[in-house]
Image 1: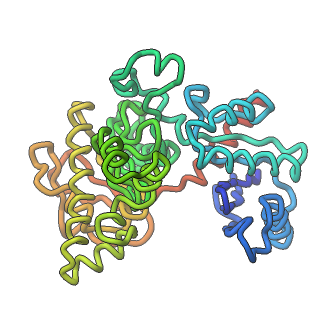
Image 2 (image 1 turned 90 degrees about the horizontal axis):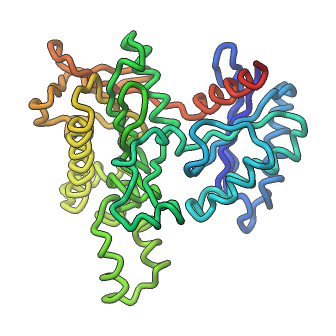
Length: 379
């Protein structure tokens, strides 16, 4: 079976075709600057038409299913869903919860339906994996009607990545996922942590939006909610200005001027004190969540690092794991080194709590989920 995976953004489409027998990428790519001045791609339809031409040139004409990444499924979707009119209407209803993402995801779905008539399509939601969180974790301490009427609650994101690396950890450790308690750390431009008990997410650092939680490339993460009022009152910023500030001008970029951890560390190595603080704050916040999730889970079998920073920055991993021996975390500096592809295990020999680096593959997880939905439909 050949499955096309689409990740449609407001001005880009990332795509990969998987041959599911070997679960390998047959062809893939990225089209960006859609709709921008001077771009050949005036619309998502133009971009998807180019993707079709690319697939045809590669000899791929028999796409049997399409999997779409959809950021927000609210409380409606606890698992991937075969796309029909009702699913599309529900995704559209979720736009107020994800105004930057769901409209673009919908565009990708609707264009794909026009250009691939009759091909079954599946929506895979970033939020679905975290729908197993209990109310004690997902509710905010706000008036109850804000939850019952406006669905104000914590949803969590990066669920596809957290689920994928948890499954990979179980396979690597030769354990049933239902027997494992894991802490997964997705650290990239966007960052989130998850506490996974017996294969189910029971807590995660992102909240109603992806702004809550860890320090990120341009997002602030956890802050005092009264800061919004202070900034509007003292600086004259509008609500939209504050939203832009916290989402696009904060995090690492706000602290030291650059949002890419590689650039932050390069500056830190030159003695730049702002960059040194940014790196230290990033690791400190992750460390706090590790400690919190050990308290939530009680027993932890492994801490897993993934995402661009989690997979490639040995020194961030070292800072996060430092001085956590009281929790059974004993990193081995010699093992915690830059490595190629595959899984890295870097705890000391006698340690029982595993420290793992597992490359994430959200596109493959979307392809697997799409295939599973088709099999369920046939049965």
